[in-house]
Length: 114
Length: 110
Image: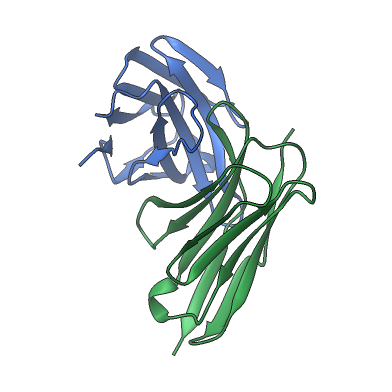
């Protein structure tokens, strides 16, 4: 079964810590995405990557950075975690755009910053 | 900039009843997606609608797309408890970048 795997389901970090969220996909997809999900706001795109070492800002990139050194792995980095970054983080991947292409999602990482 | 609005945000239904979730979007979208999310779980793809007038059905769920009105609907027929979940629609302004609505929390009561 094809998968998008996020390394942690739950994380608790302290304010000011540097936090790494890892995502790995085994489908050889070109595109990978990081979203955060907050109640009443749906999913909001933080960053996405359409190729190795390529990245684009999404709608809410402030306070985040990303790294894509290998095609299968996309990391989200919180340079200095703050309490307003407490959220559910979802990674997704998809192949190059084709009609009917569906993004596949990981199971999510619930991050709490204290 | 594409904006996606869903309504209602919360829907409590009796089993056996019909209801519709609406998804309006502000500008052109290549296609429209519907996803389901169960509590604590990831998003599961339900439908991808590619063109004006597209209609897709799976079990008790039917999705449609009207690109002229910039409206997609998710119709629930004869609801059952197993349909309780949060439903998201998402538009696609370009590539595979998705813009999501806030989600509709559906609770089906027996």
